[in-house]
Length: 167
Image (cartoon, rainbow, N blue to C red; front, top):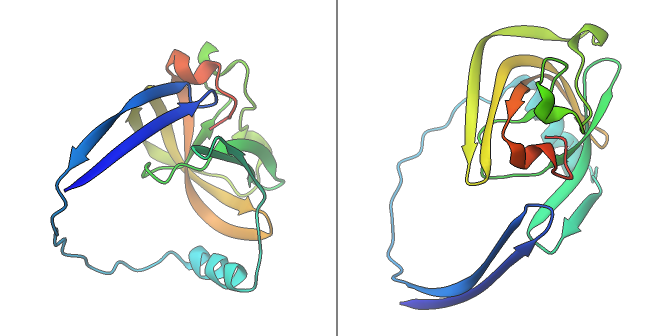
């Protein structure tokens, strides 16, 4: 058994928790299978191996923010680097009033934009985001990933309306 005390505090994520818990540590086996990587990720891996970097803002060691770009020409956004989400999303020009304080991606201004034909959503402990799934060129620092899947948010819960990040 492992005893863990924790303090989780961050204004950026609007979460505050104080407590402790005890967990029993057991081994878990998860079968994995290799999936083919999209071609753009090969370029990203090579760039990372060559020492490309991206500056991030560290907020209380809990949230990390940075600038990314989407589209051609690039449209910049401040995003929360969230390793717990399976989808990357940013507000779009279709977003309702909940995105009023954030930069919005305008697909009509991107020559590399490819519309998708599906909608999706992500549910977080702090709210929900609804978006259209599309593809466009993505950059972080000097690393460029062509034809990256991106969620173009059309509705967010109130928590995101006042967040310090765009997506």
